[in-house]
Length: 184
Ligand SMILES: [Fe+2]
Image 1 (cartoon, rainbow, N blue to C red):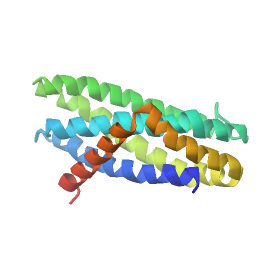
Image 2: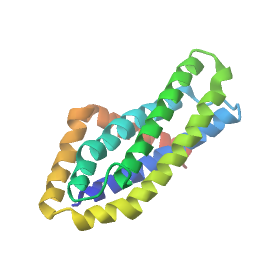
Image 3: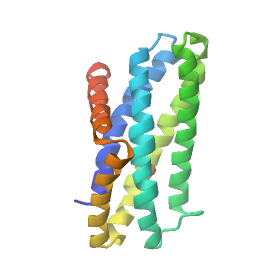
């Protein structure tokens, strides 16, 4: 098992959530009204599983290992990847702020969620493609086998210490639940 295989699997799960989230954003855009419960589940997933777990693993464990084998950070591919993460986090912060107002009954703010929502989805999908096609092959080739094994172990521990095994399980259940509603 390679660390990039774990990250690729996470990308696949997250892409499913992005497709679900995109549908919810389109509903808001069309003033169809989106289920508050479903938007809440999707935002929680994106904030915790993506923003904390997935980005965190890359920023705290994976990217530093790549830097050590000579892949440049500032002005290089790692810096660009971190910029995407920051852009997604800032879009997410904005969406969360407006969604709290929407939830409180002010439906006039729906469009304020739509713009960062589309931006978030586009940024992350493009970002995943860049990682999968450029960065991960570089990691597979350049990281020593021992370091790859170590990263796999640390990735496993990371989720548990960062959000807890129970929360992790709940987020996977949210994905399965929303998938059965929106992607059938
Ligand atoms: Fe990333």
